[in-house]
Image 1 (cartoon, rainbow, N blue to C red):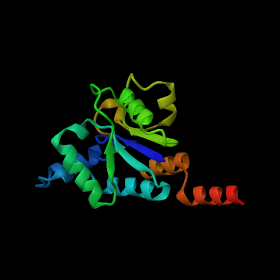
Image 2 (tube, one colour):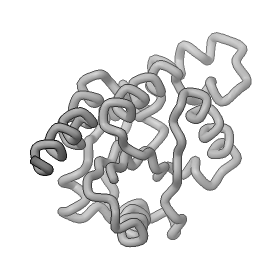
Image 3 (cartoon, rainbow, N blue to C red):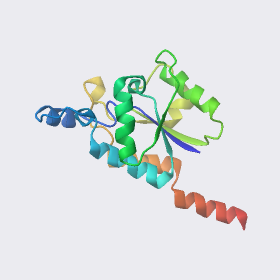
Length: 166
């Protein structure tokens, strides 16, 4: 199984989006999350067949339920890592140990946490954060390309399986 561990702030939104949306009278979850960024995530999910697992602190707040509903509206079903005192690296490791069928994964985050050990760092796709001064650019097409490169396309996986079975 392939997994995309997903942070929200700085990944599914950006400084540009937040500035733009402030000028509009939007009072839904879309005032915090860009549909364009969700579309990019969906492209990665469709290409790789990966499952999305939320690592963001959003997962245990009211916004988490709204976010999961919005993602589902765009065809993305999201699971969550367990909450372990907001210690993201340990939470990801716990998810991995409880799901031994995960054979490939990436971590999408705009931050690097102290609990990210050498192994987790190998799987991190660091999203631009403007050096901690805001959300940065959020998920970009080049990041989607990196996700697909690291996880592999569904078609490539099927071709490898067919080759193996011959």
